[in-house]
Image (cartoon, rainbow, N blue to C red; front, side, top):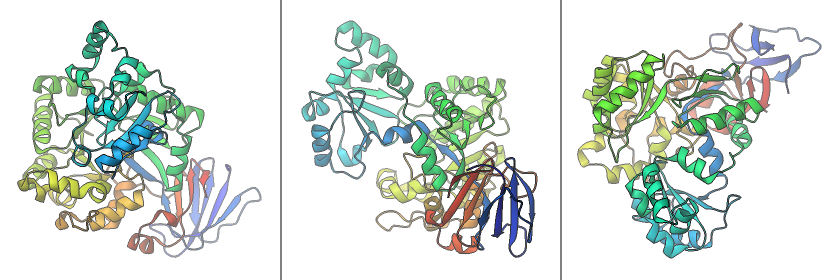
Length: 463
């Protein structure tokens, strides 16, 4: 539905009591008590529910979310279950068995030989839960052109020496081109996000191919959200719901980049007026990133993604440089037990900081990292407040953050995560989410079921 609308009897921050909110031409034009409805306006009964700006997810992977729909998800499955699922799997439209959620702790080390035992007939590719690695069986390698010595040599040039073991590290763009895969539709992803009250997303996929898939989905109307692209090759668009943000850089845990090369990539991004968003998971990766930013020179808007291990001293270094952190509370809820088991004992107290970063003066915003984390922002609110893992362990009780603080981060602008929350006020875009209850009540027990309606640019996209 689209057109003029009047949201009746809603609760808006900054206004006492219940008010009405008039939307026209994609913009909020009037807020006040007892507004008179126009003849052509759609009247929405708020019944005392909170009316908020639409939520922003500051770090997710849209194409990967869509691809998950056609994949075999083995998250939480034991190794024996993994082997059975791969042996019995049915290929997708491209002829491949696509598996996601592989975890070397739960499933053991995986290479082409192991996959060949389980399924030697169909081409199989298995994605590590981090999204950084694909494991391909021998049939798959032959399908990719590795059926001759010369073909394998070309694969090594494209992907690295580990291709001999069937390991493809951080080569999604190459793999997508080699497969000739048809881009997945993002319509279901957009609808799901709308049901959650999400109106703004930052696509953190670093390769240009995925970014263009997302941009085309926005242009075709499959994806109703406002989208910020972070691939280095992304360029400005005249579409009103597309923008270009920081350049996503990856400081990979398994293979740290050479210092000079990282400095050069930061300088290149800054030279074209774009800050950087650097993937950092380990303490060493964060220290390397800070040193590279010091050498390259910082820029307003530079940020660190994840920041999975950081003590008070590193938090102070981030604050001193004005670097924003985009974190993922849902990963604590989903994988906190795994992180606890895997990291060095001295790092356990510094896992997935949030409140500590805020205390140090770091600007922080929450995000999902979907599909690797839960795309539900209300689950993210609960996770930030509780810090409870699947086993019931509280991971870093001092890192708990009040729901209202997390929500402010979700309401911050895509170009300024953790900055001032957007408002519902005349003259501002009508990107709105209507809840079925007052905000205070909603924050005491956050749940996606509380979302009654979502509007983007004044158009009702859910509800």
